[in-house]
Structures are given as structure tokens and as C-alpha cells.
Length: 96
Image 1 (tube, rainbow, N blue to C red):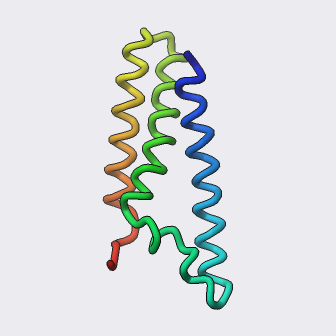
Image 2 (tube, rainbow, N blue to C red):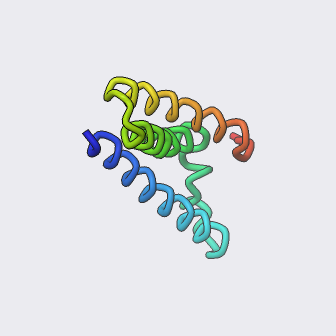
């Protein structure tokens, strides 16, 4: 059951590292502006990325707290939606 939350958390963290690295490359290397994930994927991409992280973190935390498995899945879904809303609200404005 832990893998249901651990795998999305790992994927989300790896995607976050790639997001940060490609943002840094786009900001510092001339001519590589097209690599910027905020321009390529925007709010939708950011929402998907943090949904993985939110689902994994909330679900695995609830599971390790000793709650029932269905409650852990519900908490994971709530975590994904909640973190997605926060990222949309606090993230940079999309200028598409």
C-alpha cells in the first residue's frame, strides 16, 4: 500500500528537480528560453507536478499515522487538490 503513495511522491520530486533545473537553464543560458517549463506547460504542468507531490505526501502521512487505507487514499486526493490550488494561487501569473 505504501507504493501507491511512494511512487507518485518520488515521481513528483524528480519532476520538481527537473522543473527547477530547466528553469535555471532557461534563465541563465542565452537562447534556451524555450526550455522554461513555465512557458511550455504553464499552470497545468505546475498543477500536475504538485498533484503528484501532494497525493504522495498526504497519503503516506495518513497511512503511517495508522488510519484506514481508504482514508489514506481520500487524504491523498485531498492533498493533491489542495496543493494544486495553492500552487495556482501562489505561483507566477501565466502570461500566455
